[in-house]
Length: 143
Image 1 (spheres, rainbow, N blue to C red):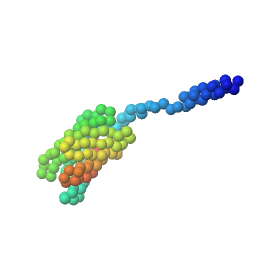
Image 2: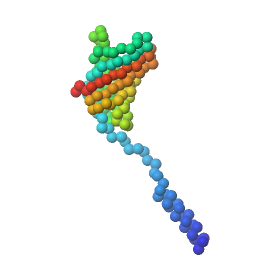
Image 3: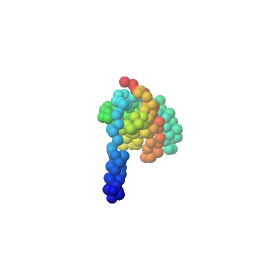
Image 4: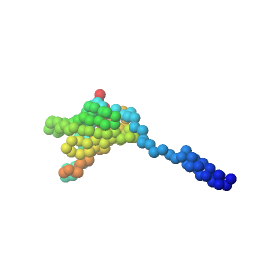
């Protein structure tokens, strides 16, 4: 009887361990509730090495032309003090938390963003190219 009990106990332990083992799974895809497409208008303040601190009343626009899931693209434009406009292509990704996002600007630097509300976002731009610069861009949805 003892010889039958030991193998039965081993089988029972193996079955119980299999029932309680956790299955390795991949996290579910994050459902996107944030839509950044549209036109955004804003202002900026920053600091550039060698120039110092500045506030800009120049018009700053962000146009998010397409969004697929958490990834988006578009353009960012600023009307310079002399009246000319500088426009750069951008591409970005919304974080899993649906509140943060990251943007790369063509040929310059990066923005780390926060979604404040459905109609307000903030970007913090950084570049280590000369001159090293940091800028806070505040945007409100215009359409």
